[in-house]
Length: 178
Image (cartoon, rainbow, N blue to C red):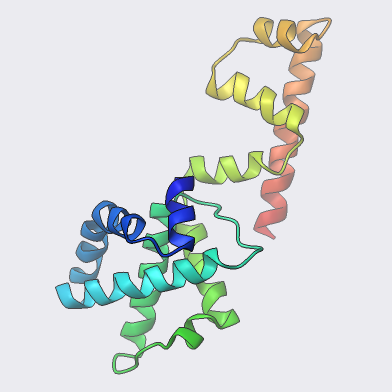
């Protein structure tokens, strides 16, 4: 995925072609199911690529969902905006307004899967807890393996640390939901 993001920043046609191949069918189906046609879907996909490339050029931009989720959310947001203003074409300047970008970010959050949200939360907790959570829940190590790997003197200490790490994730989630 990093290669695609790098290629997009340089407007490499290979990356856009790959994203088109991976995403256009789903976007086309969405547009066709929502009062549009194939030409609308093609225009929409091009507009979404322009938004994505512009976002990638911003230094502070951080992709917090899969690229496919991000593209779908941009398309969905653009399409609903276009339907509300049926005879209105969005300019690139209008696509860069704070309100527009905020609505896209909200759409992306709504499209994220549980796993994508969890991965974003894991980036915001301590490295130690991130590693412990990965070992316990993704690699499915039992508490004895955790105790040995992290040097906890008892299983109870390992359980307490697991609880503290889960609490870190809960706090991050609560902060983001405010």
